[in-house]
Amino acid sequence: MLKLRAILADRRLHRLGWSGAAVGACCLLLAWRMGFDSSDVKLGWMTLEKWLQQHPIWLFASLVVLPGFPFPTSALLILAGTVWRDRPLTGLVICLIALSLNMTWTYWFARVTGRKGINRWLVPLKMRLPDEGGGQGWRWMLVIRLTPGIPFFIQNFLSGVMKIPFGTYLPISVCCNGVLAGGLIFVGAGLASGSVTTLLGGGGLIAVVALLFQRLIKRRA
Image (tube, rainbow, N blue to C red; front, side, top):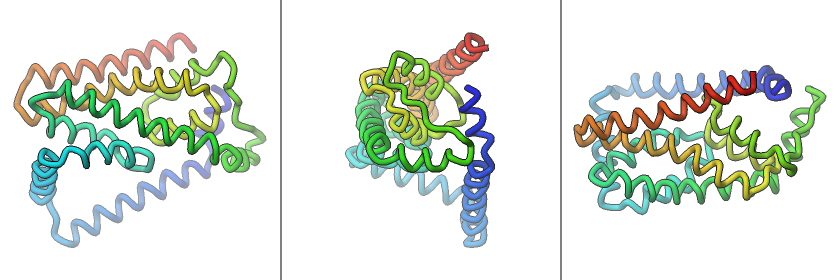
């Protein structure tokens, strides 16, 4: 955990985060200057939702590809909930298959190509990535998956470069992210259909993830 804190405290990582925030702020400013407002966003969302209901394969493909990049996976999952509002369980199964494929290709890409580059980045910190090919991989997976604030694609790449065994990585990832994905999908379905029961069910699943994180922190304290 001390190594993880040192990495998170690195100024280069902070600069990268601030740069991303600045790019996002510039995009919002540009949209405002061009006259876009909340009604345009709502109209665009509804248009996309209607199109995806007719072509769900593109939503599936998006979930396989886009979460491997700095793209908000939560937005895709909420959108999936609105698309499959009448069948949220079916939507959850489809999304879990897509996310499993995404977690697979990002893991192997990072494991094969990313480790050397990240170790070079860690040289100024006098650290190297741990090789978790032993029996502690599941502990690292719980920390990575249940720690809030770590982007989804970084979770996948970090697991790959640390060489956490794939047989440990994928089942834990599916379980942890499956609960959160289910929560977001049910929240989206509840908002779209007006079902309070579905909305509360989604909120309950998200709360489960929060409780698991709190329990993990207490056990490590």
